[in-house]
Length: 82
Image (cartoon, rainbow, N blue to C red; front, side):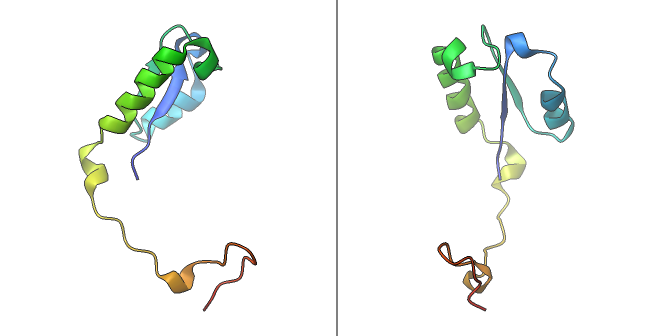
């Protein structure tokens, strides 16, 4: 599943961003923002979010194993059907 870690420029260095990068997760820095990315720089956040949604890593295109419906829990009761 594709994922991206967004971090505010003023929050750097950020241990969680470094961990994400170590696991191969792309890290996008939002300029002029701290911990409140969406409030500190709404346009920068929107641009970073758009970038993360359009830049899909090659390995994320690998097919994902389908989930067997019998393994799904009922959303109301939490019980499995199998």
